[in-house]
Image (cartoon, rainbow over all chains, first blue to last red; front, side):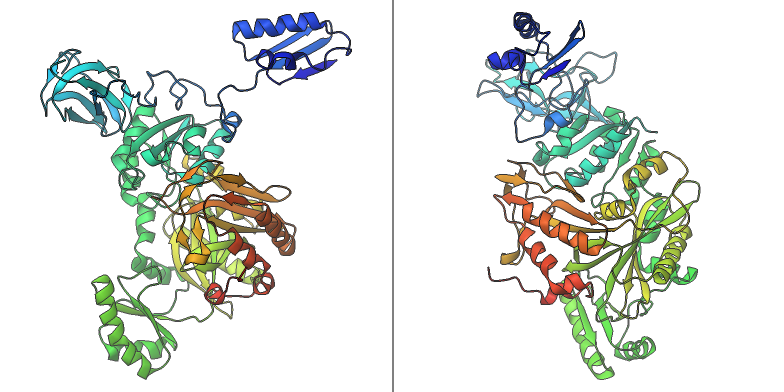
Length: 181
Length: 449
């Protein structure tokens, strides 16, 4: 006998155990323990088969807006749009918490380099004071090295990308705080 | 076959490319402007790269940004969609020099057909009928009358620098031509900064019938029958269908052969469309060739049971065409209605904004190619195409019945659309009879409701 319960297991409380009592072969207590296990382990989908009985439990997609059919084409893999960790080139730009933070954004698509050459020291480090017009990094695009300059003077507070990382247009590269800070 | 393809486009065609790639196990990269960050093609692709600001020049026409995006994602091929860079020979060349496959024809083929005067010359050379007219700009009234008598009245005086249907005048006699000639030159100078005009035979009630062609890199070219795109508004297609309701098998065969002649003359590979003008006596004349996949390609897909996108990918990857070389049989009839974000009651003014409610039609024989979703904000920077609604039936009557039903089911709230307008066209006697010309919509009046 096969029973399927896709309505979100532990998320929806009693919903997970519906339809099992009286069907024979499934102990409600065992099922509740399985649901608890799913919740604790963070599993999204679990197939259990024992003595000719199969149970499939699947959590409803959490955090997916119902108006966008994202679950039809789950975006996965490293480097995927907006679901990958911040190290990927396509992460949305983080919003600076302080209002006096200035950002340096990528004016083009390319590969980010911190130094003029692999063996040279970086243009800037965290804590450096930069002048307006000072070169902060290089963006390589189509075999051309483009120097990215600071539009305003300031002190380098954060460097948000790693050497050699691909970056997209408008991606935040540096956060600068006021030079006096 | 490619492992990763970058889609250099947006909206529904970007989704179309992504879907074809997914079905073939090919990874996809979406590029987008800042205005399209929430677009569906961005969400559906495996990877996405923001390439610039909202305008076309900053983003979808930005060659360095697109090539850069392909390089940082290691995309092996670029599909240019339609519009934007799809018929930009320079872009095709840049792709080639960067060792990125351009999913389309060669730069030479794009260039050969992009020059409209040179293309016509080539047509004459290979024996494909062209619209009779002057070879180039007409110097004065005397020459105009001489040419007009040669091609036969009525004639159309067209501004060489004009386009989109602007700067054209019709003349029926020597006298009216002489008078109109000087006025046309003055108007052309004022509107386009160039007084040069040329002459063409004027067809009062033409149909627009185009032939889909497909070629591979091994010199094989086939045609995939026709699409009728006669229903247009200001030279923008609104409704397309296959087969053409008035074409006989003999004319179809001859148009197909001409189309293959044209494509072979430029050693064409990948998808292309040759546009013809069909006069009332069913004589056809070459107008131009579009060296890209067209908006209405889905009509051919449904009417013939093909997947043109996948064929494009295979052709670009160097595979031999596996399409049958003999005449293709239509499977039933397919009609497409373009759904645009515009207000038919306000002179079709564009209507960008947020879609508050959406219901897409479905059921038998219905295909909807669209990038819109509930709560989607239609941006003001790009064209107004929201969706392509296709209805397929065993014959034209059933296709129309299904289209009428689907248009009733199609709900888009929050912005103005031409859904109601398309319904009235579908309901009209003239459309249902299938006999009309490109001037059909000039005299079409919306109901007062």
